[in-house]
Length: 71
Image 1 (cartoon, one colour):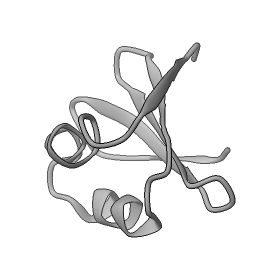
Image 2 (cartoon, rainbow, N blue to C red):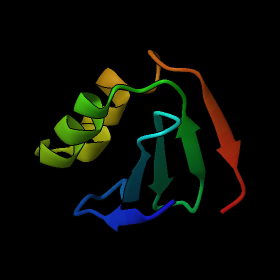
Image 3 (tube, rainbow, N blue to C red):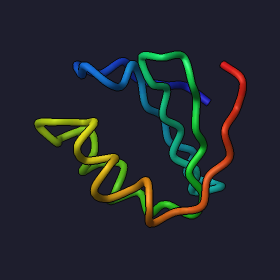
Image 4 (tube, one colour):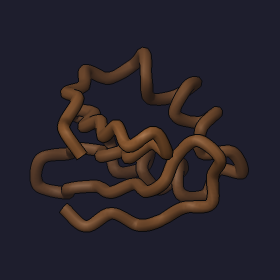
């Protein structure tokens, strides 16, 4: 999956897979999380959010199942 680098103090890059509806978030710590069954509109909203870290905390982290991957 291709990830796009973002301007954020907490997040390094984000990506989205249309076929599987997986949102991939790489944190500055190096941890990579795949959030499952995320609608594409949530990914688009994340890209446009003024604070990417706050957006993930409020609208992604506790709402979608995830798998932590090795970076």
